[in-house]
Length: 194
Image (tube, rainbow, N blue to C red):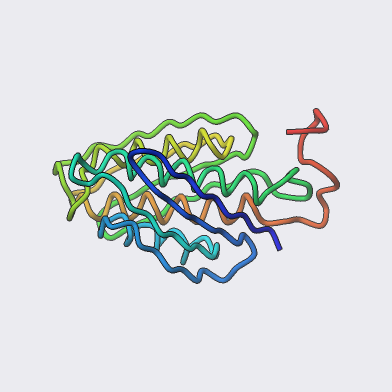
């Protein structure tokens, strides 16, 4: 089983996060930010990655530290659980409709973290989460996972739907990329390592 557990404690946040890449999408998530809980539940469900998260932070300051640090921990856990990445497909991409919104996500577990997030939002908040933190979250995941991550929202009217489409597309792309393929021998790179 490809599993990882990350614990991160700073003066601003305290996080314990566990993943099982070969799971069924079971999750137990408590980030203290309701909308982020919902998005991480979607990620777990659609990626089939079991995810356990217990997090608290300085929400009296704002939601930034906790949201970004959860992204850091998720990225670190994905990287650790993948290990040397032997036999994985490495790449994943998908286009997801979410009602009136349409979102593309492409990932490459290249060991080079880079994120391009192309999305515009009409609202400043969805529930208890400032939407500007969505980009910070995904950048933190990609940098710490060593993953190229590209997300583009083509169109949409409802900010909740756009963000939900982003998380669902991310989940499905990651699912494909971390799957093993019996035809892939060793590390999927002409360099012989990632």
